[in-house]
Each structure stands twice: as structure tokens, then as C-alpha cells.
Image 1 (cartoon, rainbow, N blue to C red):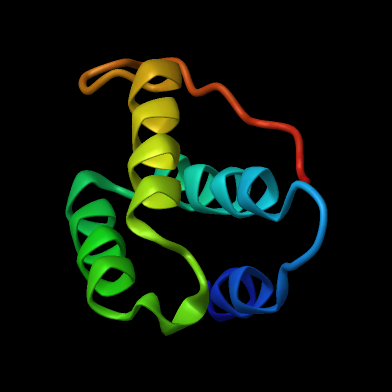
Image 2: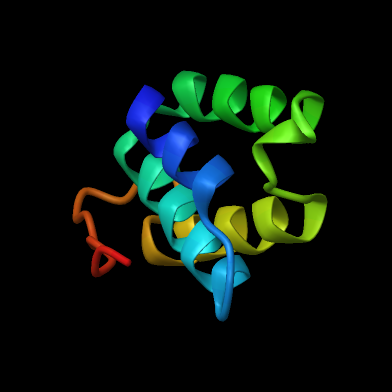
Amino acid sequence: MFEAFRDISQTSGMDAMGRKESIVAGLLMKASPEESKFIVRWLVGNLKTGAGDKTILTALAKAIVLNPPGSKDTVVLDEA
């Protein structure tokens, strides 16, 4: 998880927002519901990572669409 947050903070340049969204979505899809809650709280409270509200909301929406609550199947996004 530390590596993912570090990657978010160091991502810049063309399509940085898309790559950050992909990293956050991957974290949320791998996390339990309880872990997801803390990941989102941490990101929202610590925007120094370079992940803004829009990035987090988009990644969260993707994670929920790809892995609806209660779903038994897991979809994995391609690594950015």
C-alpha cells in the first residue's frame, strides 16, 4: 500500500490523473470494505499525495462498478 501511495504522489505529466485513478481503483478493489473506508478517508484527508477529490471519486466509482458490494467475482484493472 505504501508503494501505491508513493506512486500516486510521484505521478505527473501527461495522463497523470488517469494513472492516479487506476492506482486508487486498484487499491480499493483489492481492499475489504473496512479497508476501503480508511483508504478513502486517508486520501481525502491527505491531498498532499497529489490525488484530488475528482481522482478519488472517479476511482471509487470505477471500483464499485467493477466490484459491486456483495459480488463474488473480482475484476482486475490493468496496471498503469
